[in-house]
Length: 283
Image (cartoon, rainbow, N blue to C red; front, top):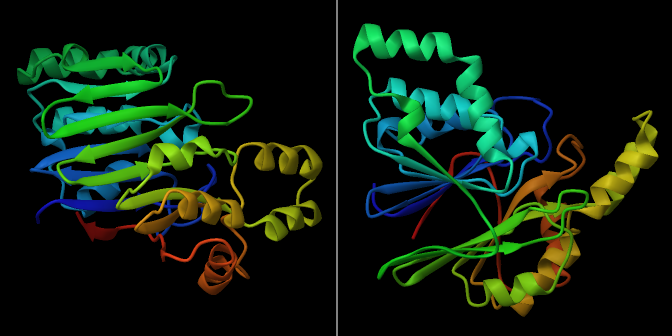
């Protein structure tokens, strides 16, 4: 299939509404190596739909420890193992992921131990190598450089954007974040910026539907970026292709693609793509 970027899950937030749009997950395939970015609920199935042999997984990156970005991490690792994983798989994620994975192993230890003994499988717990990340370069070789930038996601301190330099192409994932100009510097000249997006009027309308509206709205606005500010980041960074992702709110049927486009176009003059689950791009 060649080198490609695939949006696996584009929904903002943890609520499951339909399989058509599931929580955050993305995929890059470069030189036949898959890189998974976030593993929201449904990521395992979406990877299969994208044509990935789970046993070939080598790298998983998690932007932050909100469940809509990692809930499928344990099941994905398990299914990679059941599919025939025999080599190490590296997980790069914020502090706390080691205890999260350890708890998953413990909760499934009976099944894992039984299959190791009964089926002759390698110990999955020894194949998964976990890296608790900080800001900076995570992986660097002559053809691949992957870096992390701490973004703004209160009350979560350890939340990151990721930049993938793959040969001559650069892809940046904003992660969930409030507007901050440093992201533009981090993203300068990128071929693709995959950025979360929030439509403020629709968020304000939540007050009409939720009993905890005032606190929820304050929380949402503290760590997400308005459509207009997403455009400002893309414009300042001279982004070639801006891909909208992780739509907030995800459940307002009045939010047409055109509304998102109009809001972004007020601050960005480049190419804009409305993200959809399983949408692919050549890289």
